[in-house]
Length: 142
Image 1 (cartoon, rainbow, N blue to C red):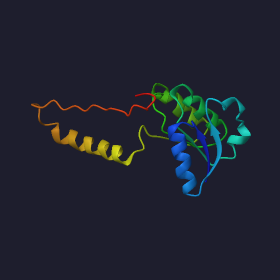
Image 2: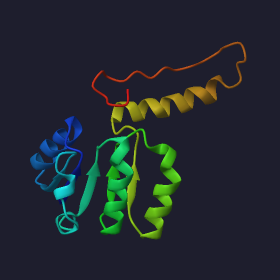
Image 3: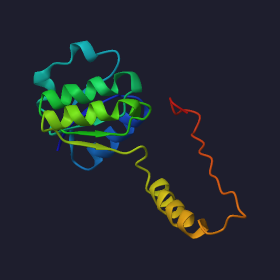
């Protein structure tokens, strides 16, 4: 698979390493320093774009991909107030978009566990159940 990396920070570099280990090719690396130099033609060489950019530029990245027929997988957080705008634009362009706030298997298992626990605890008014999320210190929107 030919991959365009949108955001070349910690996660972008980790995705690059894993993708190359699995035999994929990175055909484009887009970061704050080179976005103006990246062309539609370069993007169109990709089969898919993986976005781990920043909330300030993520939506523009998605639209750039949709405009060029490139499906997007996004792990960027902090832009969800524009969710409807993104999904409407994606649908209008007949694009492909997959978003998750966290791709960690452990975290997603924990999400499922929380849903089950919430159902189990819903009948017990004597308890006040809550959860607190803490990110690592390097997460940009921690």
